[in-house]
Image (cartoon, rainbow, N blue to C red):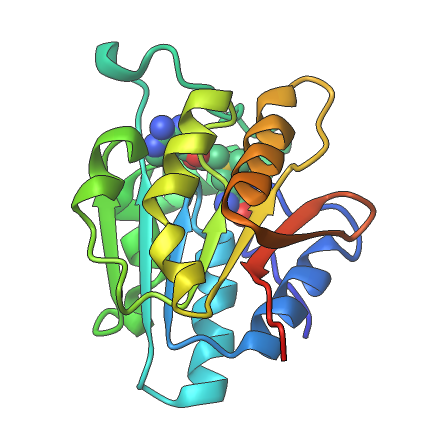
Length: 212
Ligand SMILES: C[S@@+](CC[C@H](N)C(=O)[O-])C[C@H]1O[C@@H](n2cnc3c(N)ncnc32)[C@H](O)[C@@H]1O
């Protein structure tokens, strides 16, 4: 599977990382996918393309993001949204007339899947508690990177693993965000889940231990 960048920013830009990610999703072949931390929607689009190939129209993608910096979330870390490539700035400012880090722009990028997607603007610390996790079979956790947010997001997604689904966490071993690893390790040990660290420590994959 080839991960495409759609002329936008993505955290999976490093060579081979996006392809690895898509392959993990393909192996699990989920029908209901949740991404926490959508950003410009590049991973969202890649996932929707893949799930449509696998299931035709019988899939759902749910994406949650702050989609803006405001006074309520000033403590959250948002990646740099400015482009270093002037062509991309020109394209979004004068042709698309869009802020790529907005729910409207992501809806536009995903418009061919409009019947399969649900985008939510808000903070995972508040929103995830209200989401029905019983049907979700794959979570890609790539939102807030501080310990309290990651542990919240994992605890809110616990039902996914209990139902034999998968949580794939990005940025497992980042020196500048040690809270990610701490939360994942703690959560896996406490709940006796299997955690495998894959793709040069880039991702942590959490699943139920299968004793068969
Ligand atoms: C690294 S980016 C996600 C990249 C995206 N998954 C991709 O593959 O391109 C992290 C995103 O998480 C969002 N974020 C940070 N804290 C959050 C929170 N507490 N709740 C929801 N989204 C959050 C930021 O707005 C940002 O868009």
